[in-house]
Image 1 (cartoon, protein in one colour):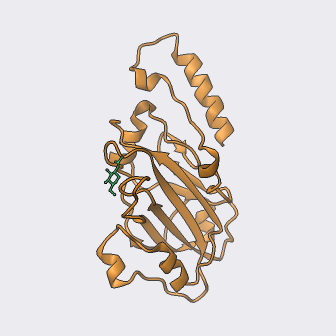
Image 2 (cartoon, rainbow, N blue to C red; image 1 turned 90 degrees about the horizontal axis):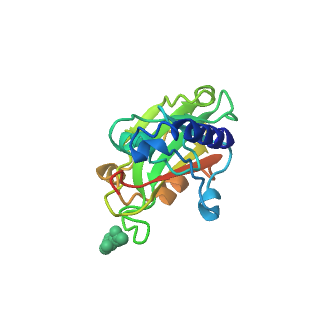
Length: 204
Ligand SMILES: *[C@@H]1O[C@H](CO)[C@@H](O)[C@H](O)[C@H]1NC(C)=O
């Protein structure tokens, strides 16, 4: 997918340069892949698919075509696809920002952006996130001048016959969520797949 994205990006570049009509930002469309330490987080071929831009898993959201603004203001929850999901098993999907308010001093880590349980493997295989929504999706809105934020997706196998819920305290706020506690309380173990994309405020 990433290779294809890069190739398409290059083709788009070649096609668009001669006309040179669009604004600076919309002419160049580069899908920059993550640096080594950030790349390590991506495991198990989890795809995160938004409209227009497509799969942003393990890359920076490109600045072209207003993608960063649309991500913050227009697009609803992405499709999240895991081709290796077991059809009849259930999964838990967590989306968090570990860099709130910024990566240097993330005193609100983790910021919970989306939490869905009881997702059927058959739905995950086609990118449909349908289940019990414990936290509604909220769009990534990194504050101005706070640098790049990571938006992480962790997919867990849900233990059989287990009802998962947020504690009343967790429900009160999205920030400073103790993800480790949550994972331990419900025996979620290690993620079966994980990925992240990076973006920053669209005006920066
Ligand atoms: C990062 O956030 C801290 C608060 O946690 C703040 O004091 C600091 O100024 C911020 N730094 C940047 C570069 O935004």
